[in-house]
Structures are given as C-alpha cells and as structure tokens.
Image (cartoon, rainbow, N blue to C red):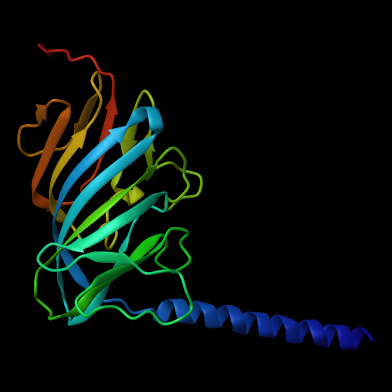
Length: 241
C-alpha cells in the first residue's frame, strides 16, 4: 500500500511538473510583432477629488515586420474607451465571446485584458484592420480613464507606482499609465499636457520651458527617453538666491 501511494505521488508530481513546464513553454512561445514607438502626444486630466485620471494619447510607432496586430501594456485600473487609427478608421471593442467575430475590412478593433491573464500582464491587443507593411508609420489614438489609488492594475502587487490623491499624487513610467511598450528599452519623445484644478502645481522633466495655461501644464521631451514621470501637490514657489 505504501509503495502504491509512493508511486501515485511520484506520477502525480511528474504530471504536475509536465503541466507546469508546458504552460511555461507556451508562455515563452508567445510571439508578438516587434515595433518601435517614436513619440507620444498626451492630453491628461487629473481629478484629485475622484482619484481619477482621464487621457487621450496619440502613439506614433513603426512595425518592424508586416503585421495586422500589435499589443501594448496598460495599467489594469485604466479602462479603454476607444482606439482610433488617425489616418484611417474607427475602433470598436471586440465583445468577450468564444464565437468568431467578423469585422468590416479596415475596421480597427481591440481586446483589453485588465486583469493580466496573458504573459504580458494588463494590456491591450489591437487589430489594425489591415496588414501594415513593415516600416510604415502608424498613429493610434487611445482614449481611456480610471481610478489610480491602489497598487491594483500595476506591475507590483504591493507598490503604488501611480497615485492620484486628493492632496497630492504622482505618475511613474513603470506604472504603465500610458500605452506602454518594451520596458526600459523602447524610448520615445513626448509632448505631454496635464490639467489640474486650481491650487495644484505639477513637476516633471521638460527640455523646454514648462508652460501653464489655465491649469494645463505642458512638458516636452525632444530626445528619446523613458517618459511619464510626474508629481503634483499644493506647492509653494520660492526663489533660490
């Protein structure tokens, strides 16, 4: 009897190891179209009283091979409302269904994974509606929003890499609060406008003078970099002597 149990557990352990190895191998085999993001243009609204971020972001990128689909990471707390191809067609979210979905030729569609089921983590998979030849520049406009007041949706379960608080807050590159590709490797230029209610100030890097027009601050990075790091609060301006 003991030998039987021993043999059973040996077989069970072996099967479990094979299953885990299979899942690992499958995850490693996921192939996605390589592409290079060249620039971002963002219009962001922060609503501290609601812990909310709303954004419209244009992403300019170039596929490295012929493709119809691309994937971006995005914080799972942020829900995408629409994605449109600026020089082409409109977007509609694909319904969550096991049946085949027929799309009109040329229609941009997307499926968002907010829970991070795939090996990529929280992300969005986009069907461009047609085969895009490698080397062809593409611009996608993302409209999305959500509450950022906990680690939920981010890459670290216990660390808030983005927080929109009632009195202060911050946004970090690693939080994936904008459509994100290839951590720490795909650097890009950026033109970011961030709106805040009266009484708040925001700080961040800009290689041009930061402008403030009615609570909308503009930050520009003209050289490729790891972008998207900001902090806001109710600060007192002082002149250093």
